[in-house]
Image (tube, rainbow, N blue to C red; front, side, top):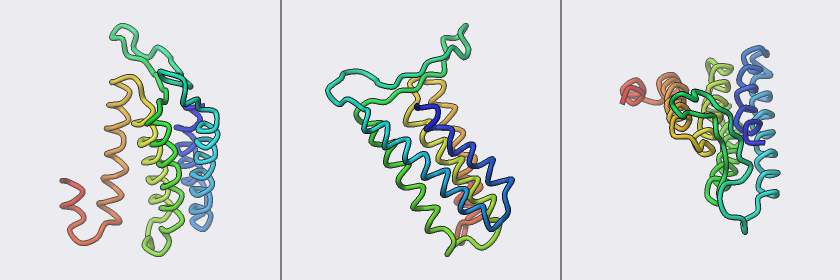
Length: 158
């Protein structure tokens, strides 16, 4: 469930790149809303009385260094994931008034940012957390640098 939640926006970002400019916003919004629905299902299945992480997914990634693909949620991260999947559709819905150029790229980068943010909140392996954290810098750099306001390049580099 957590991998699905994390990578729905990534699949949506790829779909946005192959759609028309007019449909890009709706595809992005649909992907983001779908991840919100998955996070609601996760919240409903979450047992607050249980201790430890829930919905844990684990896969050996670089076993010689003890690095793995491990996702899970606890009482805080379940709410952070839900909040993330709630805020991104709102941001995508409100974007058309401010975004007038390169809309497809903007929506794809926003979905990549959602994937990275969810990965940060759901990662249980420190290396995986670092990968998602660094991955979040790439879409944020372009979002700030291309669609930012005055001194946007200065802000993006800082």
